[in-house]
Image 1 (cartoon, rainbow, N blue to C red):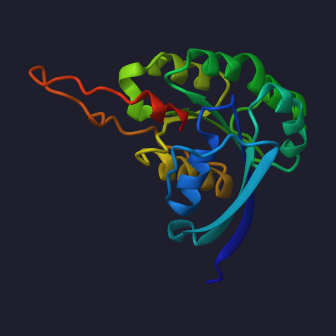
Image 2: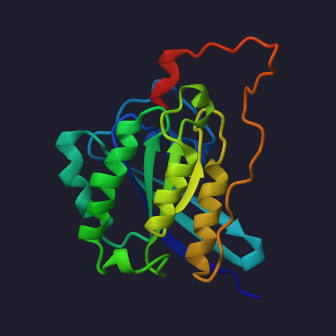
Image 3: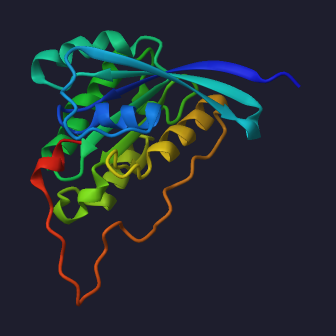
Length: 215
């Protein structure tokens, strides 16, 4: 049987500092650099992944867009031909989640060929929300239930991620890839597991290094 080969354009959007570049670096090369610089304009990376259960191979063409105010308008040109859009926010920064709701999702609607507010998980564009920096849960400002509720309201897939620990990164891209290859696929919610660094009642709460919040 001939293996199906497809190309999927993925773009990551969200405010500066939420970890978009770090998510991509982790997915593409399984690397992490806490000192990675902010993106200016846009960066591109590619990775081939085989889906044996679907007898398919998918080339992820991943675009990293700048989140700074002066670059927000520039990202509009990258929505063309996109198959997957991942909205990224920082779970320790409530403002970055507010921007997802008040700016970034509206920009997707304005630049999509259809009214996505009326269509959920449509074939040509799959939307996901990544609550990044899940390893910093002690500093969490965005409640997981609130994030999931918003994702459900716009027909998006939600998953917590951490580029630092690699939590949820592979699962996020694999679930989205399966949805792209098979629009009828029902994406799986993240499995509830013990949070990394969970402490017992008698243990001391570990301190967090503020310098690590960039990713």
